[in-house]
Image (cartoon, rainbow over all chains, first blue to last red; front, side, top):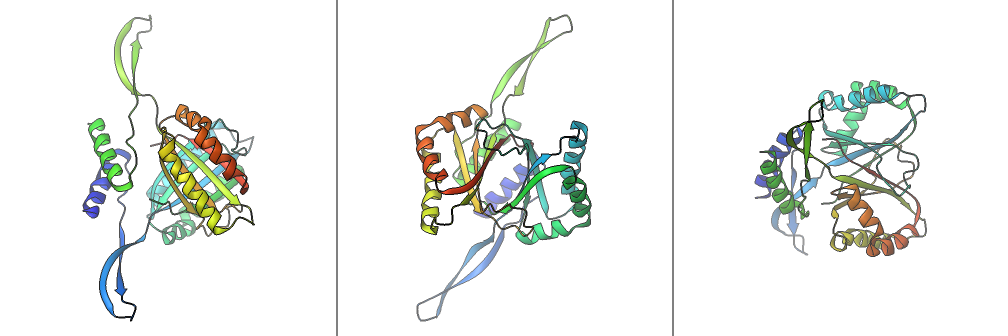
Length: 148
Length: 148
């Protein structure tokens, strides 16, 4: 049932957001009694998606046009790096003034931490990252597996 | 069609993730000619969701149990503050070492920036935020409207 819902969800998400299909990773877990006897087997979700967040503040001399170009380049990595499943970005709209000067958020989604590692090492990412990072005054990059 | 898909998407998301139903805000936009005459009316998506991201590093003397308690308190705000629609969190799993010492990511979703403002001012949030922030060494809070 969950798998069917997941497939339907992916179809719809794919339709609306043009997101690539996610796989649902499952592993079999052997259930043992206190004496160590196998008493059953059940499925467990082995890996959830990994969110790869990048917060950026661009250097003052980077023009709006240049920033737009960089964002397009970032978005295009979805087409070049297979484990990168989706990409969203936005600018700071917070009113609390706790954003520490960061102005842009970039959020990519991967199937696994292995997928992020493949992305980080991918030539298309390496080339883009050099260009991107040379335009930023500061960045934070943090990956996490969001709870459901 | 998009509305139907959106409703279906919400139903499924609600089923899988126990996320409250999102409303799709629409406003009517009057189309005027160059001379200022009204020539038509169309619907426009007025507001997208707003992601409210909080990155945290807890103080060294905050125990794992205390952190767990704080996370439960954060998650419970979904039940107390109406405009807060969903909450996910996770710990840093990045390998790049660009996380600047931040260890936890908390991501809340709101229907609008007005919803975030209502949340920030809500007594349940104010009380929790005082408790939470006193346990952190540093935080970044940034809101953004993710691109689709």
